[in-house]
Image (cartoon, rainbow, N blue to C red; front, side, top):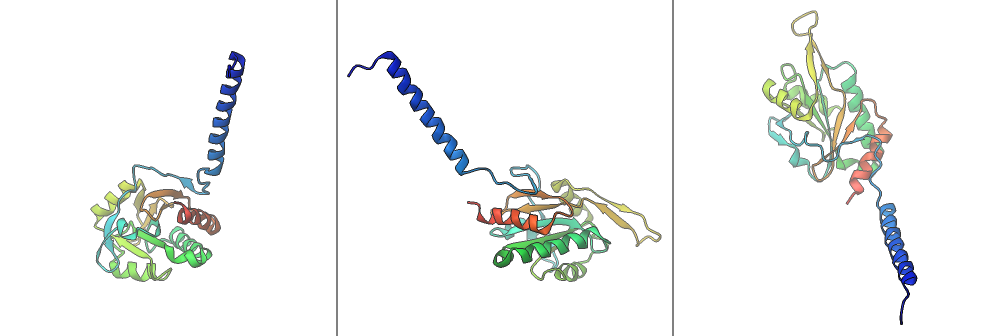
Length: 204
């Protein structure tokens, strides 16, 4: 059967449109995750964290693969930001229901001079017994802060030991594959964080 030039053009146009429609359908079927927190997937920082846990044992983030880990830098004598963040994280874990055991809070002290391993164990354990408290030498702490691009600075108090510490108040979320995915701003509602974590737990 002879096909005229106009007919060939019509068939070609229809084929192209069909392909574009198929691609559009694929795009609609698999949209990128819509997180409430800041998506930092693929970031070239916050990739490692090698410190000492509250039992005095070496710790690395890779040991938490299979879980969603939420990493926060603070200190035990923090008057407001730290306890608020950890309380909200505990509420996030409760909101996850049966998936709550797939979430692990990781609290890194920026005040290793005062935060001993025993104090870290007691403090972090008060929020959840399975969470991880980490500390290092001043040099290791500085290296960890640099790796995560977080800020901290001692602010003198009335006495040498009564100083406070200004520090970044955000958290970092790692997916079950151990990759950093989210930057969570301070005071993010637990329901919002729980929704983001559910996405990470169901992603393939």
